[in-house]
Image (cartoon, rainbow, N blue to C red; front, side, top):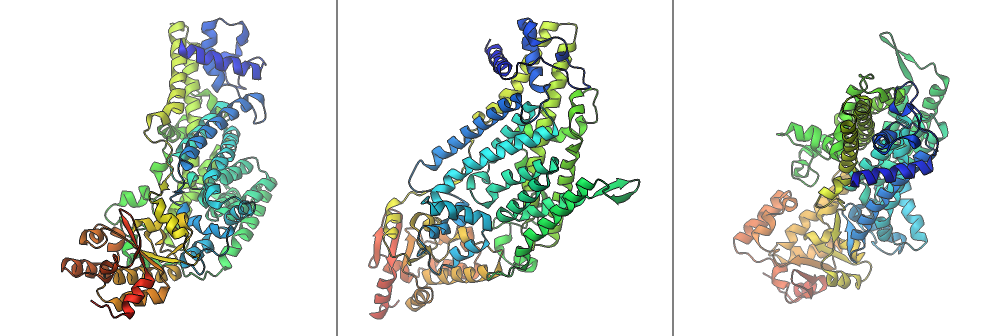
Length: 627
């Protein structure tokens, strides 16, 4: 009875939105071609209603499309609301990636923050132009970038939902397919840390889907504008856009490649390629003060790039992980196969080969082959990026985003083809009519329940990656210090201090990003110097570090001076020589200077952390206190 009521409700809503008679698909024999829904019995109407969902071709700007688009947007709003609940559940909350890419934007609100800060200057320098200026604009109206970062994912998801729905209708003009695609893409992205980050990579999906939409419609203005937007927010994707436009210039004639003879396609591709070239030119000619890009040889010699390192890349003993699963070196296939119904996308090429068994496949736009072109370009750039490590940055950038879009679009189309074929089989059968009508209802309802209800089966559907600060008094203490304060710490808490306190830190694991050698060489030296000073028994070494970098405070944990603290910290272990020496000294019973002074020089203390004043350490040195 519940299933019947659900479908009766949807039937009523769609009937009010679109009161035209049900029509058969062009060239496809459908049960809907016989009579109108108004004159059928209840049982027959119930068997037809699921078919109405999957056999009503329509354009983007028609009433049925508005119904399913609206439903798609409702789910996007629901998911966004769930994320916002977590985002504003406390005072000190920051998304993991935002700790790198947003913290420095507090400068937009107060230009005196993070003065001469190596870390802030570096991450500001690598931020794409459009991304950082969008934050700057809202900051000029008084909206704190760290607050805007929590709101932004919901806004992005609505734009992304609209374009995903529109792209699907370009490939198969069935609004229900658009709903499936938009819902699955939302589920996929809200379960991972791209969209929720509110960083540059969050803008990939709305802009790239917009590019696909205008590309499918052969809109010159739309293609050029979206290429420019990609260059302002995520330049790597411009290469993919340029690749598909270049591939579109060619056609296969016999055994040879020939230039495209269609003038519209030719102009679209050529002008789009020119725009892509101009858009990427500033990145090509720009000289970074933090260059050069790290080389393959350098990366091979750094433990940070090995499995389990700070930026795990090389998995020498696990080729499957390296090529398919790894977040930096692999194509990231598993992340594209979420939710489970996305696996249906792998069936689409097979379904299209059987138009008699899947008659709705005749309504699939021939431009569906554009997805194959996109896949080809993505994998080509993936292997080029591997061949040129790390000149095109990370290979996974060229597959992980496009692969998600391709598989989810294909899955939505495949699911509609399968549902339509099964329902038509049940409806057209002359025997066991009522039994097969019930089957048709159950099949469609089961598919919708799996699609809509999947998040409810998960313990933690929205993967926010939010880091929650649990030491508010510590943050308030640092907030009260001068804006040019520099904090030295090897603790994990240092990762969040720039975001929660708007004060500079000397180093932390979060900011140990080694792709630009000019930055990382200086950063790594700081780490080595800090480890050496924190575990040194020579006060002069501690004093030298304070003077060299201008350290004002030292943050340590109660367990900082145990061998296990170092042995269990992979990031510190990666700095092998200096860390191993510190471990041996601790095991030998040597007491570091910082450990000896933490009581007499502490200016803040809670159950876990102690803050030591550098000025007090200087005074101790001046008075002749030595080990």
